[in-house]
Amino acid sequence: MPTSPSTTAKNTTAFAARAAISFGAALFAMLVGIYFMDADPRIKGFMALGTLYLTTSSFTLAKVVRDMQEDSMVVHRLDAARLDKALAQHDPFKSA
Image (cartoon, rainbow, N blue to C red):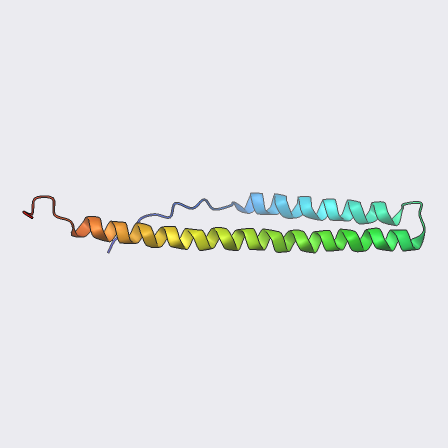
């Protein structure tokens, strides 16, 4: 049974590298800014923990969004497979 080509777009290695480098630079700049901030150590600690919490929450949100998108894609692929099967079995010249 021939399979149809995937219609999902794939990210390139360059895009993934750019995203990782951008993330690393932003996190590094934030932590360096907190380190050199003229403030009480308790305030610096609070800012650093807030930054790390925001970072981990962002990863979790991205994973949830990706998982929801993948779940909906599976449903769409199953629907498309059912439609392809029905169309393959349908004979327009067959009398009712």
